[in-house]
Image 1 (spheres, helix red, strand yellow):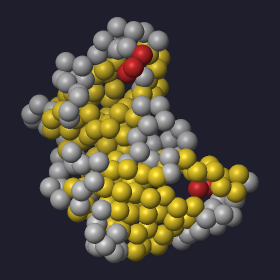
Image 2 (tube, chains in turn blue, orange):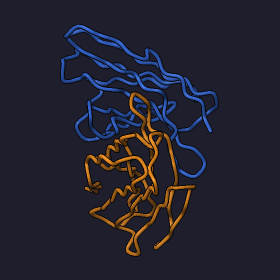
Image 3 (cartoon, chains in turn purple, red):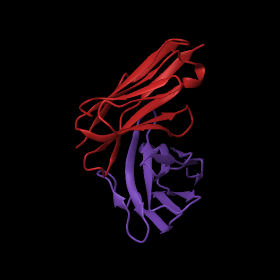
Image 4 (cartoon, one colour):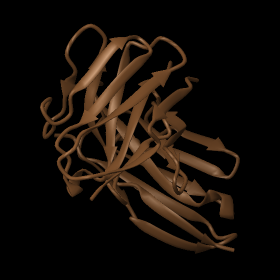
Length: 113
Length: 111
């Protein structure tokens, strides 16, 4: 299993500002994933963070709004840019384990006023 | 694209009653995974099913994968308050490159 640390765990932000979420894994992993979970909803994949190359974004998510960095095999950041109240969600970092199952960080709970 | 649907969306049960959540995919799945998310927590992996018709048990939890590999179920026998949370199924399509989560079933247990 992997231990995944995310920070901040929660934040309250003003409309129009940006927030960067950090994800640290205790072992080297090839792929890291960023998910969004809107209140009371399921998990939606934002993008796959690839080391050494640009992130791969899912339909409906764009790099300008959710820039991602992956400087090494244990760390990634997700920035939520120019935030609006619709961006209020839990943002989750995850990695794939041996059987293809996902391990998730504890999530970053973002409220945008 | 691939869609994974879960029913019911919510379920209230009395402690000791059984509970079942159902997962249906619009396409054939290569495998299906189940996760549990406690209130205020993050999703935690429970199990993965790979074979057609597979049944796996974890104590009071029984997981099934349909013969056609398009549906799955999670059954909890004699629920306890510790079972409270949202249960998500997630399936890999046959292309195997994307895990799609169902909408989740939120289980509430009255003591």
